[in-house]
Structures are given as structure tokens and as C-alpha cells.
Image (tube, rainbow, N blue to C red):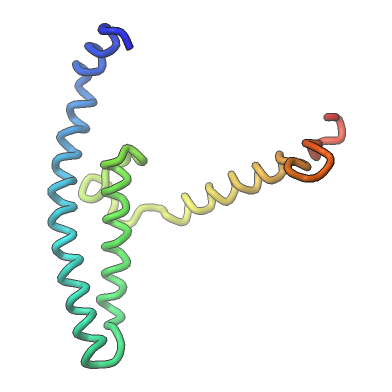
Length: 128
């Protein structure tokens, strides 16, 4: 890396804006983890006294765990989308799942005989 590239990256306004959002979401994550602790204790008490966890709290905990995942993905640069309140609470998880399945299917089709005895012959009859 040369000095010019470093200067350009350090002076990039978008990087500094993202850093501010990351600080904000780090604080939100800290608060949400305290809420997760409360949910764990309440579910433990429900299970202890009624024999099973509360379904409504379980649904809330499911949404909460997805939100924690979105925050961590943003903080680790895995995802550039900012979580709630800057985006929808419920993101299109099904769309992401379908995209992943399509990618997997396409890679399997393109793989051909890779890894099989006899070499790496593709499924395409024109390719040898």
C-alpha cells in the first residue's frame, strides 16, 4: 500500500460515516444482549414453573436473535445493509435463502465430474 491510497481511504467520508454507524450499533448490540439475558431468565422461569417455555417469548427471541445476527454482520463487514431502525425489521431472509440455493445448484451443475475418479470432465458435451 502506498501513502496515496492510505490518504484516500482515511479521508473517505463514507468510511467515517460507517464507523459512526458501527459505534452506534455496537452500543445497540450491548443493550440488546442485556435484553437477551432477560429473555433467557424469563424463559428459564417459564420452563421451570410451567414445564415448557412461553411460545410468544420464544417468537420474540427468534426475531431478536435474527436482529443480533444482522448487527454482527454489519459490524464485521459481512453485510453492508444497516440493521433496524435504518432498514426494515424483517428483511427478506427467504430471498437470501433462495439466492444461496440457486448459487449452490448452479455450482453443482457446473462442477461436472470434479472429484470423481477419472478427472474433471464437465457436463458440457462440447468441453473435453
